[in-house]
Length: 508
Image (cartoon, rainbow, N blue to C red; front, top):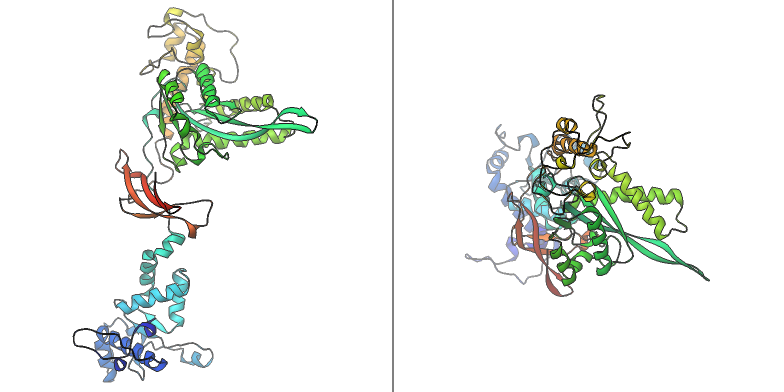
């Protein structure tokens, strides 16, 4: 505090130009004298009129900012707070006449900063209590403490809010009507221990993982079970998916630790796609791959949410059937049933309107069924099945695709379909797209959280990196090296430089 850093006027030689260090040893009386002198000069500079009135024993002007404190001068000439609780001095060891400190002085800032550090960077009430119990009455102390806490680097490290930004607009691949699984979000989760074979010592187990493909348009899912997280297993799962669901125009996936869950190989897709074998496979199938930034799982919330739903359903199945003797076939069956359950979940709010009993689900467009099958199907005219030229194949109705992906879906009128005796499933598909456009898209319009614009990060800003495996006071400090503004001008992705292991590295 002041008594530890300032010298008394009588204990050092003051030059007309500057102060210099005095080698004279200081005692308690000298430090106390220095403190009284500084506080008295600060009060004289701010409350000179009040001090003059008190010296001349005149009433303080009514417009004074401290008239409500009933100030008086003590034996050292310091302004102190008067009041009605002077008898309390005899009961408790408490200074009931604290020294008045003007809020605009630098001394008030130093005192606030000092006592804030004394209470180990706690909140406003504890800091204010420490100031008051130490015998100081700072005018406007609440705002001064709040300002000090706001600018305190240590407090920001301990309790600062995370950087946020207004939710971005949805990408085009979630808003454009396309056949199912045209735009796909990909994620991996697991593993599970399954029984591989019986041995003399018991059961030999191995691990299984699952790769989930989520349709970004219909929110339907497709799960493929894999035996290992290797390049060949991933490509085989991708080939099985494309053989069943048809060609894909674009894949999206995470790039960081959330991508493969609890396994040790934390950058599976990052490694896979950069290998020539996978790049050649994607080029041959005419599809692209978009990566989300690392450590930003919320960029893939559309399919990350499906992982959580799938896990809860699968946990209920495994608990009901028991975990002992789980085989590859059993796990594969469970995952297929999980897909059916997730794909039957409603996408929109279920209404109580009796005239519209059906509700929108991914299964309506994926299976062309709504829980029951009609007794008979109308006659089919192959020439009028589609408005664009193609030849009739089973894949046309199974995948909703015809080898290539059309730029837009044809407009379908359900009444005209029945009049021309088109297929029942096309009517169901038309009903799906009608509800999808009228009910589902409108539900995506509003932002349920992060609705306000926040200041964007700039190059050169100093930030802390959240590390879940270590306490907050051990998080690394980094500097923003590059920013990547979105189409709306807000920054949601940055590249930072941080020191790790004695080396400065860049992270995105």
